[in-house]
Amino acid sequence: MESTKIPTEQDVLDKVTVRLILEHEKEQWNAFIEKEHYLHNPTLVGEQLRYVAEVGGRWLALLSWSGAAYHIAGRDRWIGWSDMQRRNRLHFVVSNSRFLLRTGRGEYPNLASRILRLSLARLDGDWCERYGHGLLLAETFVDIEAYAGTCYKASNWIELGRTKGFERAGTDYYEPHARPKRLFIRPLHRKARELLSAPELPDAWGAQERCFHPGCTVKTPQLRSIFGQFNAVPDPRAVRGRRYPIGCLLSIAACAVLAGAQGYEAIADYASHLTQPQRRALRCWKRRNGAYDAPCATTFWELFNAIDPDRLDQVVCTVLKELQGERPAAIAVDGKTVRSTRPDAEHDNKLNLFAALAHEQAIVQNQIAIDDKSNEIPALADLLEPLELDGTVVTADALNTQRESARHIVQDKGAHYVFTVKDNQPGLRQRIEQRLSGRTFSLSPPHR
Image (cartoon, rainbow, N blue to C red; front, side, top):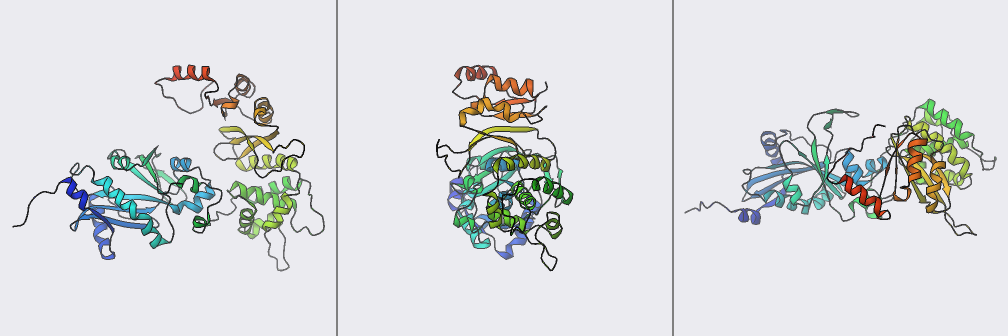
């Protein structure tokens, strides 16, 4: 006589398996999603894999992994990558785009997290076999109105907050859908964050990195304008053999760095994707057949190793602010020791720069050389002196949390400040903790 015993949760957890669907099962998989999933939409974007979780041939759950969202503010801030890095490494991020549990709600409380774990255990291998590259990070979105995301929390996913409630409605724009979701991520590699934001990837991952070129988005009239400013910089190269004016090379380098290029090879690669009209506007070398060449990496290297850095710095800051457009809402001030600078023979010091950087665009507004880190405090006024800061928020680390710095920013520059307080100022920290205990506040600029 056939047993009618209802399986316990432990029976199901012990027997459940997760596998890729077969080609002839896709229609059935899509039908279940269309009928039972709250989105009622089985369409997936980009690279994709569909899985089924089953016990004894019964489909208990359906889930899919597909291409990650192009731009999610919370995820991108957590990673800390540039726009260029995001374009070239987004395929290392995968989205758990569908998850349909076909059991009764609360019937098997731990089943969803078990299925997630089983799916993740084989995901990277399946993805490599299908698409030829590995995965570093997973993301998913949980509808606030319908679910609590319990299974993701139980599976050690990290919640990064809520989305803003927009969805892609075309190639270049988004529309509000009035249903913000909770964003969860899960690293699939112990160094996922470090790799995704690394200046250069190790060979194993670098071989899988893509190379997308957004092209030069600066309009031709603006290219001519910045060419004129850069061309006024004294050219240290010998007159004989110059193929490219200094304004041409500096304009290309500025646009390339603004687009995320790092290093001479990346700048030259950016130059190679300039259109013929753009090359003409920048006065690139013209061949006899009428085509305009793009400068190579060696050309940029020779120029930047001979140019006057102080004069270049002044022009670069001016041009980058022009390319930036509107004045930034917030800037950060900080000091850094420049990498790969040669020690001074007498003082054995490396080059220290104190810079003001726009938050959103990551564009330097101004920078000055200082002797060492401690000299940031008296140099703040000099750094901010040429900048229009009325209504701007200035952020700084604990070193610059000083009364005089705060006074200068508010009274002399008409700006606001957000300073960091650490244990080096225990009295101030204690007073702040007492006043802010149990309170929440907005990071929007305050009204004066």
